[in-house]
Every structure is written in structure tokens, then in C-alpha cells.
Image (cartoon, rainbow, N blue to C red):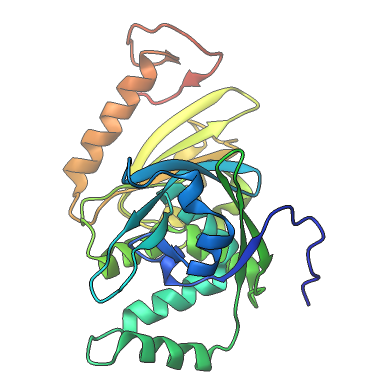
Length: 294
């Protein structure tokens, strides 16, 4: 059970985490009682400006969102909407893992034959849990604060964490949302020990780092990244003791020639600023050395 908070400083809206926060539109309608309690029309002159940029703080990170007031068809009164920036939404997806996965289940099963609200209720009855985010408005700073009040612990938390961060799941999201199939999914640096947790990492351009010997290597592969990077024979003469890796997952439309072109571009870019073996004039801005040979 989640204990009730003791650090609430302003009037708080306890909001259920749903598709208004996790979905493609990235907006949530503020209920009228909270519009009134927060005195939003007093603090924002919506007759003068249609929207106002506002900071949204979540887990000590501040994001730039915005608030606006607009009229909607079939509604007597205008509504106030809070817009969620992409980076905040990605953060919310990681914290509220189970709600995010359940929403993807909804998107997969949404065939437009069943009313969306009815379908979501059915899915929620099949997986009965709810997660909540507390939202406070600070009038002096004109800032919103998000606090994760209750989260549902996944049965396999590390697996779910890797699923949410994996390029394969991001590609599924792009497909469900009808986004461009030319998108490159970027990954952060990870320790070598995390390699075997990667899911669906193929058709990638990757970078290896040896933090002890100050070495860096750039490569590309169509095959699964786990298989590629576990090939010790391939790296033993180049960068055998690499400690970290990162990669960019390319669209499936990018073939071998495309990967090689991107790899060559990255190698030459690194060579202009690092010591290298390919006879490229460099500024040598770091102690690291690029170990690619061609």
C-alpha cells in the first residue's frame, strides 16, 4: 500500500494515469473544480494569449509544457488543457510502466469497431490496477508539480524496464500511432553487463567505449546486437576490453549501404576530434583514441 503524502503544499489533483498522459495527443483536460480552485483564469490572461508556456517538474527534473484554454464542439464551456512535452511523456512511461504497457494493449486491440471507452474498460477489468500522479499548481512560480503517488510494481521489473526502453517497442509505438517509418531510435550509454538484456536491437550503428584505456570504436550490423558484440574474436585485436556501449536503431528501410554510409560518417566525425588510425587531421580534444582502422 502507498502511504498518503505529507509533503503536499498546494491544492492537489490526484489524476489517474491514462491515455491523456501517455497517448499521442499528449494533453490532459483539467477538471473544472481544479480550474476554479487553482484560479487559472486569474493567473493566465487567456483573452490576451491563447497559450502560456509553463514549467512542469517531475522527480526533480523540469520540463517545458504549456497550458491553454479553448472551445470544444458539443461543450458549453471552454476547457483548460495541460500539454505534456515528449521528454516528460517518456519519463512518465518509464515510471508508470504497467499503465504504459496496458495502453499499448489498447492500441493493438483498437479495431474501431468497439467504442474506445468500452474497450478500455474491458482491458482495465482484465488487468485491474490503477496508477496515479498527483498534480499541484504553484501560482507564484506559475509551475506545475507532478508526483508519482502510486505505481504498480511489474512482476518482472527489469524486463519491463528494458522493454520500455527498447527500440523494438518504440517501433511498435510508431506503427500504432502512424508515425514515420524513417525514424532513428537513439539509446543511452550502458554498461557492458547490460548487453544481454537488449531486446530487438538489430539494424543498428553502435559505439563501444573502453573507459580504462581511453578507446572508442564505431561499427554497424544487421544482425542482433547481442550476437555481434559477443563475438570476442572480432574485437580482440581492436577493442577487447570495452566497458560501455550505445547504439542507434535504424529504420528497416535502411540497408547495408545505408548503414555503412552512416558508419563512415560517424568514424570521420570522431576522427576530426580524436586521435585516430586513419590519418585524418584531428583537433585531439580528448585523451580518447578512435581505434577504427578504415
